[in-house]
Amino acid sequence: MDTAAQAQTRSQFPPSFLGKRRQSTASLETASDAPSSQRFRASGTTPEAVAGGPGAPVAHAAGAARHAVGTPELVGPVMMTNVRHYADGTRMGEIDPNDEDTRNELISFLFEIDGDDRAALASRFEPDYPPDAFDPRIYDGMVVAVKDEVIAGFMDYSETELHAPGQVAQINILVAKEHRGTDVARNLAKQVDEALLARGFRYKLSRVWESNTAQLERKHRRGWRPDPALTVAGDTKAFWIALDPRFADIPPPRRSPAR
Image 1 (tube, rainbow, N blue to C red):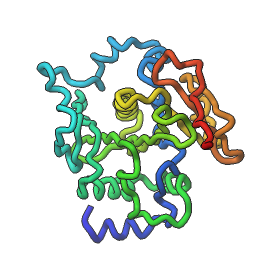
Image 2: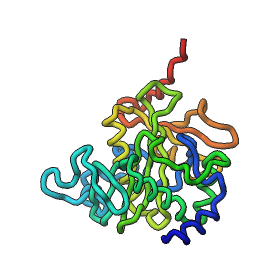
Image 3: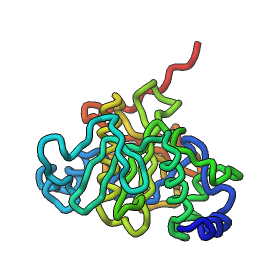
């Protein structure tokens, strides 16, 4: 999109379009929000069967499918590390939030989403926060998907402030409308799960609008547990799920009060 067209598009956005860290609460793509092992069980599909499916990573020589940790690579318009290549041409990796061009591309992606999504996304953030203030550096991590050299979606994660340190990460996901119903959301979730486990996290936290009955049903069906203490009446419901099956029936520990 050229500069003039982008400026015109941006002028259509309400001032609440974007928001601060941990303000986003409801996903615009929710096809795969359970940890990998639970997704396979819920669908009746084994990991081995999925590995050979159309969305599975392409088989390469040893080590070729995933780049070395910390090695930056320009993928389409964004700089990534830990890049994975999929058979449908999608590539995913953890972005370099310090790369200015990457930040600008993510802002552009948010400006150019489908009009129906725009209002839904605007309602996720506190009022009067300027759109250009979006900055991936405020999250603990973010995995981005690129298809046909443009951003197809992303999932961010940040440690919560209400639970024991290093235990629980809140996740948010946004996938472009044209890529819903594909493997983009599932693979983003899988790669984020792996990043969280590598960092020592044991749980994921997600929030869902009370009016989003379809998503609430999906949460229950996929093993997410409600957290009434974090539910905001008339607004959102909170859910948690264990990344490690050993903690599947153990609620996330709360942060100890300061003495």
